[in-house]
Amino acid sequence: MPGRKIVGVGDLAVTKDRGTELVTYSLGSCIGVLIHDTAACVGGLLHLMLPDSTLNPDRAQRQPAVFADTGLPMLFKQAYALGAKKGRLRVVVVGGSQVMDSAGHFNIGKRNYAAVRKIFWRNNVLIDKEDVGGNVNRTVSLEVGSGRLWMKVNGAEVKTL
Amino acid sequence: MKLVEDILAKVEHLPGIPAVVQQILATVSDPDFEFKDVVALVRLDQGITADVLRICNSPYYGLHTEMSSLEQAVSYLGANQIVEIVLSSKVVGHFKKAQYGYRLPQGELWRHSMATALLSQKIGERVKFGDLPTLFTGALLHDLGKLILSEYVGEQFDEIIALVQDQGMPFVQAERKVLGVDHALLGAAVGRKWNLPEPISYAIAFHHNVERATKHKEIVRLVCLANLLVVHFGIGSGAQGLAAPVPQDLLRDVGLKTRDLDKLSLELKDILDQADELLNMAR
Image 1 (cartoon, rainbow over the protein chains, first blue to last red):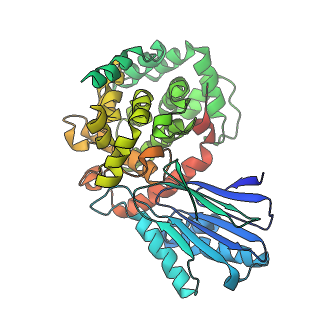
Image 2: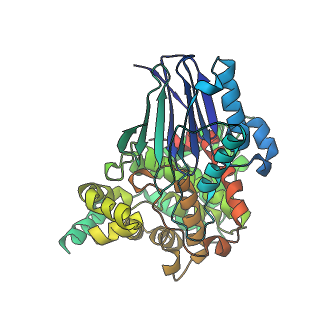
Image 3: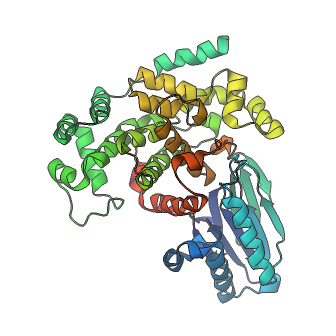
C-alpha cells in the first residue's frame, strides 16, 4: 500500500520514493500537471490555481505553485534535480473546468489551460494526455513506483489515464 | 406529487437548532443590537463558550496571546466573529455527516459551507456590505436543503445526472424537474421552521436563482457569488460538479470586476490554508 502524499490547492510535490502516491483532490478551474520519468522513477504533481503571477508577485515569491508561470518551472526543476530528463517525462494535464457562465467572467479554467499550453509550447514540452474543461471536478493520483495514473470525476467515476 | 409531499414532510422531522442560537441570530439581525447582549447569550451555553475560546486561539485568528476568558476573547475578536464561531459550533453537527446522494464524503458539505461563509465575509468587506453576521449565516446555511434531499437525489441519481450530462441542465434545475423540489427551496423551508431571519431564508432559497428574489437581493447575490467561487474551485461540489449557473450580470450587480475574481481566489486559498480549525470543527 503506497504512502499517500496529498497535494493541496496551489501546492506541488516531487519525489523519487517509489512507495509514494501523489494525490490532489477537487480540481475545478484549477489545473493539475502530473509528470513522471519511469527510468529515473521520479514523479511530480502541481495543483495550480491561476494563470499569471503578475496578479500578486509577492504571493508568487512565497507560494510559486499558485500560478502557472511560476509553478511549472518549479515543478520541472525539482524533477530534474532528482534525475528526471525532459525527453523521458510523461506529461499529463487535468482540470480547467468552469461553472455555467455565458458571460465568461468565471473563465479562470480556460485561462489556466491556455497559460499551461503557452508555457509548454515555449519550452518544447509535449502533453502526452489531457482531460480538460467541461463542468466537472476531478481528483487525480499518480503512483510514483509504477507511473500509474487514475482520475475520479465528480466524486465517482474512476478512469485510468 | 406524492414524492414532493414525502420530501416536505421530512422538513418537519429535521432536528432544530438550539434556542440560544436562534436568540443570538435574532439579536444581531437588529441593526441596533448591543454587544453585551450577545455576550450574555453566549455565556448561557458552556459548550459555545468553550468553542469561542478554542477557536479564537486557533491559528486562523493569529492571536499572539492565549485567551483564557470569554471577556478577553470577545474584546479581541469583536461581535461579528463571535457570531461566526457560535454558528459554526452549533450547526456543524447537521452538516458533518456524509451526504451520499450528492457524493459528498463525511465532512465535505461542512467544508464547502464553511469555505463559502468565510469567503462571503471577504467579498462582503470588499463591497462594504453592512451586515456581515447575517451574510455569514446565510452563506453557512445555503445548502441546508441538501441534508434532506441527499437521500432522494441518491435514489433518482441516474435520471438527474442524465439531464445534467445530456441536456446541459444545471444540477439544481435537474433536481427540481425529477424530484419536484430543489435543495435551495427545501433549505428555505427548513430555515422557516428554524425561525431564521428573513434575509437568511432568502439567501438560502435563491442562491441559485438570484433574479427570482424579490427582496434582500444584495445578500442573495453575495451568497450566490461566494458559493459559485467555492464550487468553481471544486470544494464540496460532489456529484453536482461545476454544473451551476452564473446569473446574468451577477458580478456587475455585486459591484466587482473579472479581475476581482482572481484576487478572491487567492483569498480562498488563504481560507483553505488557515481555517482548518473552522473547516474541520466537529461536535
